[in-house]
Length: 330
View 1 (tube, rainbow, N blue to C red):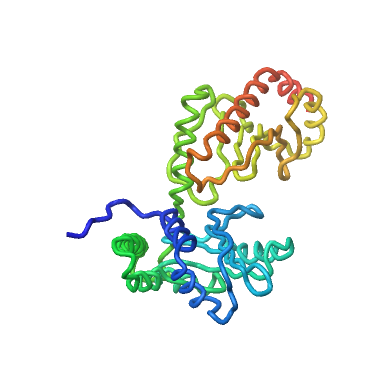
View 2: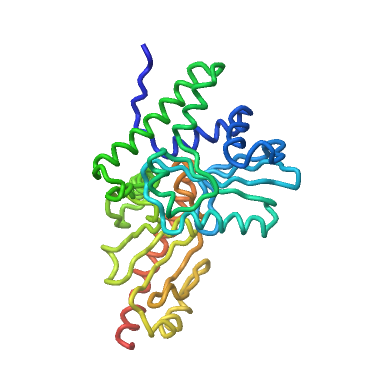
């Protein structure tokens, strides 16, 4: 009897499945090159396999680098099951590739989308990648790999469940592709927020944070302390940017007066500056966080940020008279 795969497949599982194949399987690498730029492209050997790479404020799911006859050839890969595309996401991949060439990180790049066939056909007219590879075509590859034994069966089942997940989303939305909008929920970021909240409850229970629900791919600002701060003041951990900000909103044309009023009172390691058109922040820089990594890898950096949020909250309460005097003066 065949072993049943019972867990819910996420895009992270697909990322790691492909990462393993690029790293360990020459057969898979040959298949990949053959089905993208072609075997005549003089690709010689693999140099690097990277997962969840943040550059230019956006992420590549995988970046795979080969040695070519003229230098390094980089493949920037996006994996999708049923998540919605972020605005300009395909263009962002191309822009990162162009920047990599400018920095001499590679001499050539290509953008790839791995996804279920139905998903590819739905988004292909409006999201332009250089190449599209369906999960179904990868399954066909694994079906030919007799030497892999049960490992091939496992990978086939992971891909099958991913395709079923897409199809179930499609059916829930209706039979017409024009009616279907992929889910915006990102399970990796949802999990990150949940673990972050659990940590904060234990470490700094005096910093209010609402219990998080499901989160989308753009949920990269965690709001803290709102219930214990005056209106229009909140602490944000802007985790992909590496900032913890005590943010004063709706300051408008009083921003310069605000900065002048507060700047002599901020502590070492803090800066004060505008944020957007109408806000001013008192900022502490912290390590940038990639929420698609395992939370245990990020925990030390999370704790640094949470401690910085605690420091900003304590600073405000200690200097709350500054806020009162600013409001009475301006």
